[in-house]
Image (cartoon, rainbow, N blue to C red; front, top):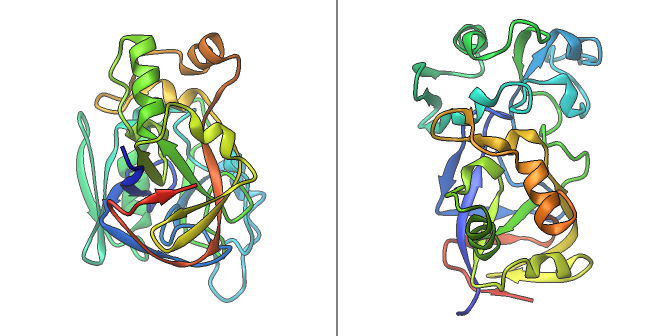
Length: 253
């Protein structure tokens, strides 16, 4: 099978929801546009969030520990949704749905999320946009994952794991299982775009959640370590040559 781009995924709010795209334009040394553009600070994160005077938003990249994350509440992993015109529509299988303008209705989102967040954890405070895109990595990388690797892992575990729990950006079909691991340091081409594979993606306990329910259905970190001797799944990549990518674009290595 000729390797092709099977899925493009964007997550407008860090750890909250996600949406599929048919195409997107990538720029050199930039993240996937609109991915993790917003994030929800916690009380613990506020002390690190130096605000710019102009916008009252954090003016630099902040580590993931400053924000609401699925590793602290697996229920967040079950939230679906993204942009509908100029508003964000989000839903949860047991908690209903909400539609907001993130520029003006952040407090409504906080109120909606509070029942899904553990009371013993630092409380969510505000929805922020800021000067950076709130990916876990400080570097301007996106993530690339393989449907064949996922199928191999599902076969080993006897479970349907799905793509959403990994919160990846680009999914490739047609590679041999785990061939992406051998591409670190190499440049691949997706349509007209060139990506340099930079590092493996280490996984945390957030991937242990069934994204249909928000409940734990596997110890994913332990499972990866048992089967492969590491806890990685997927790779990071930096855009070298920009351009538009589309679903079913050919992928060459």
